[in-house]
Amino acid sequence: MTESASPRTSTPRITVLRVQPGDPPFRLVEIDGEVVSAATSMTDVLTTAMAAGIHIHDLDDPGVVRWVGGGKFTWRLH
Picture 1 (spheres, rainbow, N blue to C red):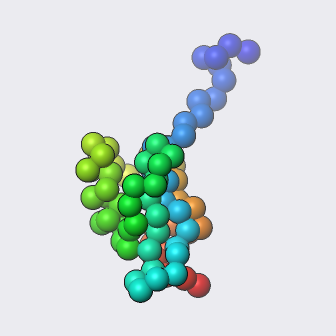
Picture 2 (picture 1 turned 180 degrees about the vertical axis):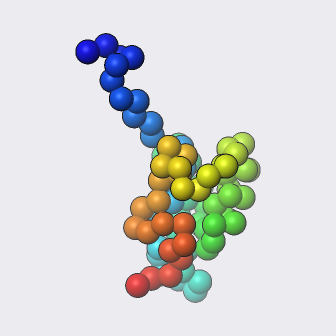
């Protein structure tokens, strides 16, 4: 099989990690494997991405953002 026939695997530049305890609870945001901020909302994720020069058009695109331990609406511990 040639490379062009193999499925393309893409690692997203942004990873949003599990909710951490705190007041308020937060999620760490990694860009290119480096922790760059703590987010308490989707807006914080978008702001962090913009500051790094990354434009997010779809928070549900797994090629752009990887959500660990819950999706974009998970901001509280369960």
